[in-house]
Length: 143
Image 1: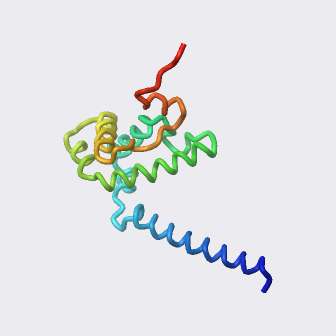
Image 2: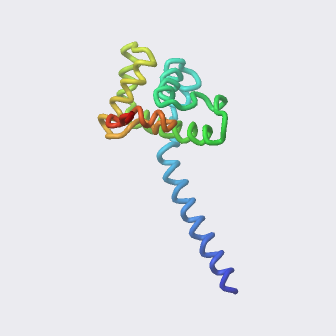
């Protein structure tokens, strides 16, 4: 076996191992046998509007079909996973907001604040540089 063949085999084994680890970890985080959040998104207008409002807060595309570039699609996909994971972790909080008949838009803002208080970070990354600078309290324009 030649040297480059061994290197290729080693890198493909490492790649397969890494991909399997990532897949298993991702499956544990996102896949839920009782995946009610995805079902609720499809069937419950309050949950759908709540999730869309979360995207709106951070300036991202609200739906996959509203993406205008591949970067938009990457952001939407990444932010969707983050939002679903956050909703699973803090299920009691958003369900309480829903049960109190708070509008989905107001609930999205409150949920973002709850998430920030719990985790010390924003619910999802801002979509653009302009949105990122709006979130920075110390940002100022020098004239």
